[in-house]
Length: 311
Image 1 (spheres, rainbow, N blue to C red):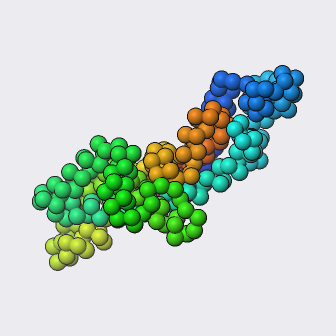
Image 2 (image 1 turned 120 degrees about the vertical axis):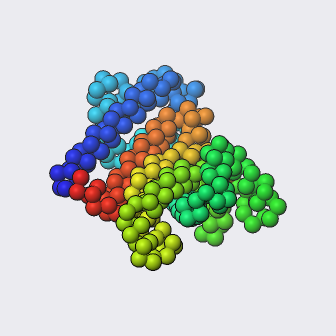
Image 3 (image 1 turned 120 degrees about the horizontal axis):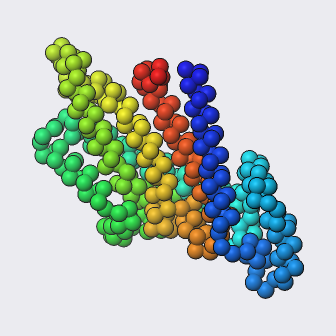
């Protein structure tokens, strides 16, 4: 088991190193002069050359790459071209809104998927099962920005319970502002989880140990929650870990739809301003979070299923 953990961590380190290399090369291939973008179009060429020398851009590509790796390991992601402020500080300022959105969206997605999958498996072949499957098909086909706009038109504007945009300044305002974006993310990610969990639940209900429990008089509800659901959860955990990574990129659409000041909207702003250090910093953070979600999913699978832990 220890050897497996070491191998897994080694593969993660190699993967992150590859991500660093790709992000660095993308930054190097980006058009424009970094010194000129930092100092402005009216800056003299001598000042631009001095800035590029200060940034180390006149060194060899190999030397620049290792300097970039060292800076990243020390938490230095460079300075924004648009504001000249450290990228790490700008990312931290936006991380809070994205964290709220991810946590709330994932929680709602899990609650929705477990509830619907359990109902569909319990009432398989009935109108309940048909309604759940219709929901999954419809939600998969519906773009996230359309779901968000629909929630604004149907819920936010008529009732006034939730703001149509922004994040607010207090905790209460944060809660109110994050509800509709989180529901939008949940609608976008829950369908796949529902389909996987429903299939696994139906398969588990047809297994021998569940049939043996049913012959002893165990209720249908207990069969689902105590016997079938834990065994069906292992494949679902892998799907959720992948979906958690998708939530990051879904947040780009949702944050811009609801004008949340998070990393997703910051990424779009950086792209429009051609702020490559900011783009690279957010991209690198997203990659690290996706890898982290995968590791957490593997760990949870090992905790739930001894067979995974043994392998």
